[in-house]
Length: 319
Image (cartoon, rainbow, N blue to C red; front, side):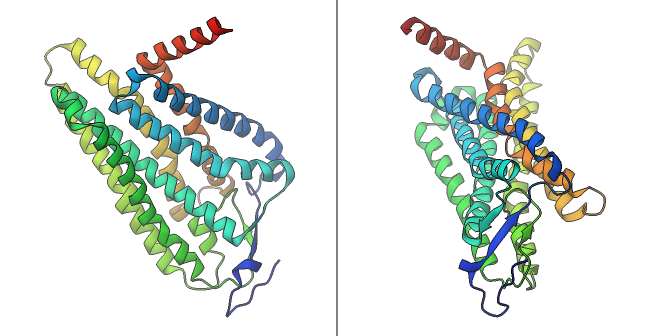
């Protein structure tokens, strides 16, 4: 165990050890196989989706521009976490400096909050498309979409930047084992020998004011969408309208369900949910949704299917 000075912490000397999934150390090699596979699929699938949306002018619509933002966030989230996880599983390389741990923590929280905002923007996109179809392109112009994207990043930065100060203000005096595969705010704060009440209050408050409000507004958006859809007299028109929301609803459930499980398990389920289950879900969370998002949109969105077929046909013709 490394010992740190109690009064004047030298952050350059602090090194943490990420142990992966506590209790499942003997299974790390086997666990790494699906995680590595899902990470590769996530990178390839989302990168191809971004490429497709960029080169195909017919996909330069609000829905697909938001989808490209989501795909980029998925690439960044999985890349921020998966390589270090795999290094731990394969090479037992769990050592990480305090600065690198804080940087990883910041980007994980930043990307998570930004992705939540993007999902809210996509719910708004579906609301406008179904409730105000004639004004769709005049409301969601490229300029408005760009501003929404910038606002999502700026909001995430303003929410997550204080986490850096909150962990740097603490004094660290002995513990250096993080029972996780990556660094997150409370995981670092709990290693301090100071009172971390401010960290807990800020983390809970920001979770409620960012992700909590996003979920609330998404629910309101879909309530309005359902109200508008069931006022449509034709059943076929209703089904067509609801079908345009199917992919987004699947992505929302994949994003928020494990996130809320991890959030509540971390704070309230410490004695009822085994630690290794909590950490395993947290590990899968950063690779499973990024892997499935492009697949879901590819399977359920005909425009993307058509463009994929065209691209591969063109490649085959050239070859």
